[in-house]
Length: 437
Image (cartoon, rainbow, N blue to C red; front, side):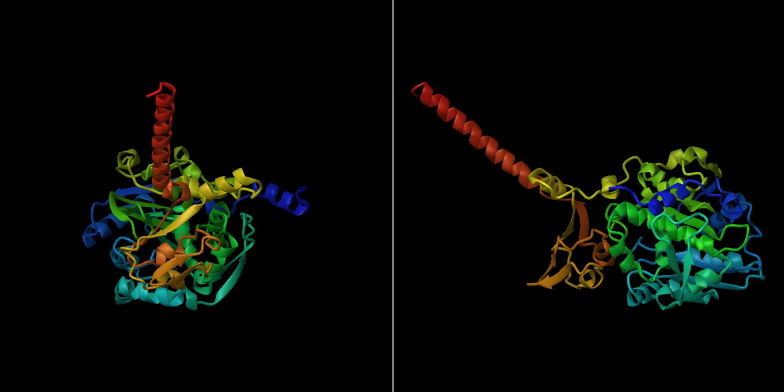
């Protein structure tokens, strides 16, 4: 099929862009600070060290500031610790000239977000420090067209009015795995600014397209910035990461670092490297690379601090298979293609021993692929888009994602064993008959 002129021109434009000056500010600098625990004094000291290493002691003056934590759920290790909001608000308020401080997020639904903000105590602790709490499902939306750099997959992004109006967004992600997208970090955390998240999941079913959309959100936030300095400052919590069945039901894994920088892609490169991953496998990083001159390789990054990141790489970090991000639609033509397509599909599994039949997964599935039937949760695999919203909403860690081929591997092994045994006996019988025994 001949590609349309419009699509061709767009692809060409992706690689021919003059970046605004704001993207050049400390674009290659990432600060690392050692932090072993969440004791308030230690967190405060580490945050001040990051600010000093980035040389931004005066950066908060005369600004309205939004803190954007990860408030997925109050499950242990699934959200940005409240101590970061408390101590960072305290540091910012030392300036005395700050206009206003907000703390905001959106999770799966408006109600789910309100519950998570309250049960995690982020609302209580932040308000006690003088910040205003925002549930972005309640926010007015403003359409932002992506121009510099140009969009990759979403021409326009609808952002909360408060995000458009503040002077600075301090992005506070947590280093975690994700059952549907392998990794969730700095750029993925900005997905929480949207109020149409389920629609985005349904629109961008192909994993690579979804990742490109995440990069579009990052650039949309910067599109609202009219200054020559970046609008997004990322400070990632990699003190206690989450491995395994993230982003909610995984296991804690100590890394012992805070990571900070104005280039969110660079922060993600460091974060995923610490998981012993290859950042080039993440389509969101490739999406940034194709349309900007921002450093997107760890060798290009100026890492400052008194620690060597190589000493913190966890070789046996448990993360989902990268192939989940590389999934492509295989044409349903011929018997072989159908088998291959099924084998390489992602299978959502519900652990019946952990499932408490709360139906949170049913309520929050954007594809409406789940239902409660005969006292168990049933998944319609023909409808499932493998976004893993069900796993994010499950309060008991009962949902996991694996390649279908790995789900049936034990049965295939049993089949091979039984078939092999029968074949051996058949051969023995034939030999015995030939020998007249």
